[in-house]
Amino acid sequence: MTRPPPSARTSTFRFRTPLVVGLVAVLAAIVVALGHPLVKPSSDSTATPGQDSSPFLPGPSLSDRPPSHAPHRESRGALDEADGVVPDGATVLDDEVPAVANLDAELLDALRRAARNAAGDGVTFTVNSGWRSAAYQKELLRKAVAQHGSEAEAARWVATATTSPHVAGDAVDIGPDRATDWLSEHGSAYGLCRIYRNEPWHFELRTDAADRGCPRRYADPTQDPRMRQ
Image (cartoon, rainbow, N blue to C red; front, top):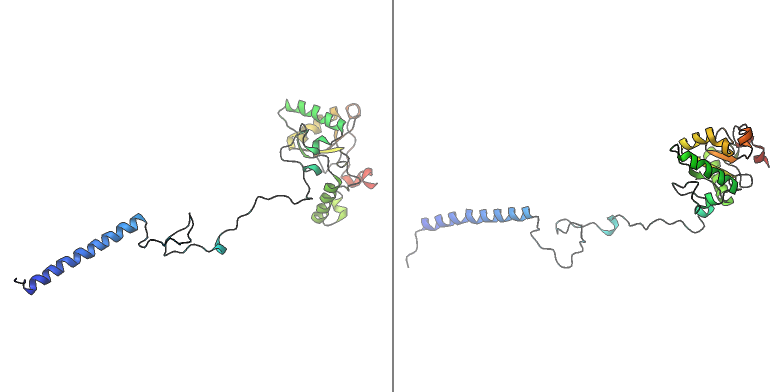
């Protein structure tokens, strides 16, 4: 068998080498375009769905992952609706809400009569606060002292558990502003009166207000003789 001359072998080698290199480059480009790793991860990989399973980029350790939090639940003994905490959107018609249901019966009746007529003017009475337990009132006073810096200043906004008309079921805080404006104008016809100038949301029942009008307002609760008991 006759071997080809050296020049022929060299030509063949030079021809095949660029072809092989080109095929490798094309294959690599296809792999990159498809997004697959060149090396298949082993079956014992610790990657989880949603993480990058590429062997060149290790997944985050457990300490790097955000912790999962269980839904918040109030601890036993925390204040809740049974103490008079009012759920968002409660109205004077919500009998299932203790802050409303435990109000004085005459006060609640007057509020509901007023609310029905206010609805004709497109106004809804929401209850921001109504009846409160003594424990709730004490907590509100504690927070007021912390906020205002002294018991004397806090007393302008929050009464004690023994003097607060909220604990007795004799007061209600109404919102929004349209409702308090409506009651300020029409409330006396139902015996519903603002008591303090610094609390336009606070209303109590004065049964003779329909005939005599609402009494003169106190500047704040510290001027109210009932708060000095």
